[in-house]
Image (cartoon, rainbow, N blue to C red; front, side, top):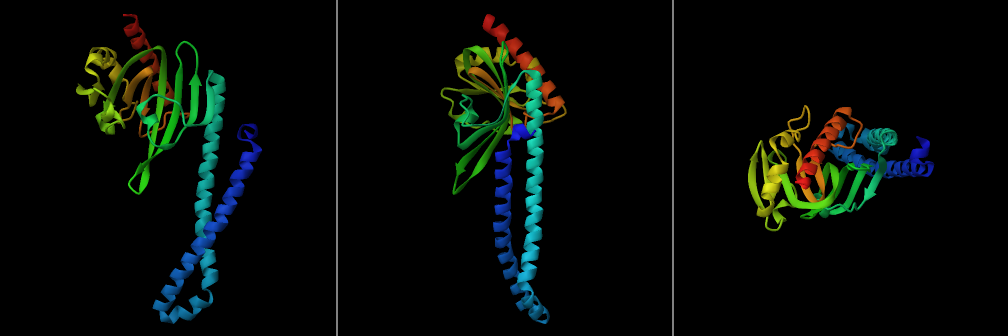
Length: 273
């Protein structure tokens, strides 16, 4: 694991954590001190005692509070590093290429064309006759004076030819970002809680692809939430909004593998016809 993480990166993480702890403790101590002084003025009987020991009480309370927060962050980071290490071993054992982080991924899907600070994390790619890419994805969308995060997870298939641009949008997830700007697209109901969005000339092809058997696979096992699907250029993206797909959960990998194989089978039949 040490070789995977890198000693320099680990030292930078803990050095930054120490600096963050010191600065945050000082700021919280000032805030606590102000609160104690205000309380002391309001409660005259304890005013003198609190003022005498206000600085000590402030620093102690702030240090305990910040230590709890920093400990929680450090524990979360430790768990994240263990997960990445397990994914690296999984990738090596199953013929995947693994990248902990990819900044500004060059992908054609709708969600990848929006926002800033775009990155894919825990990305696994398998090459060969039936390529597969799995990753978690995040970006920052400017909205009003602040903004909001865009967080999705996906797995993607790649074929050797371009296909019509088609979106299968799950109503339970809300509208997939960017679908309203698809040029010339029309929306039709597909049943089972889905709407099909594509150009009129691609409708027959899309209905041939998304058969009831294929659509039934898009509800993850044991989950009520469905996924969204986008066919664009030479890719098919299956998007998950609420739960990450790139991880070490055997049930998720089994579902992804079976769904990817079913999609490849159907696409290959359509492209041959």
